[in-house]
Image (cartoon, rainbow, N blue to C red; front, side, top):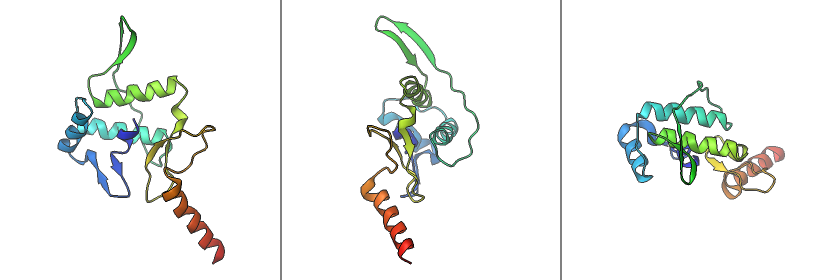
Length: 143
């Protein structure tokens, strides 16, 4: 799911979902059927907003089927957007949803999974974004 959220790269000003060809390539690399790029854009916007990005998003519904097989129940989807939404549902069911965060740095906005013990991580990278913010804050205090 985090890979999908990061198909938008604010720092490099790139977006996998600007055209259908790049979306198909991204999906194919992950062994998924692409589906419509417009659905992917809507899903990404809704998911980024749901994990804390400052975007306006409309509610989103994606069909997902639950199949009961010998190994147990499994979420089955038709395309990449469904697979991403199924992954999001798994995170929610496991109580891990709040670990997916968006870096608050305006020039980053990268999505990351917070693996810290107390779920307190703020920056995608303390060495890059956290350090930049601390340096900015220090310069403002000194001015």
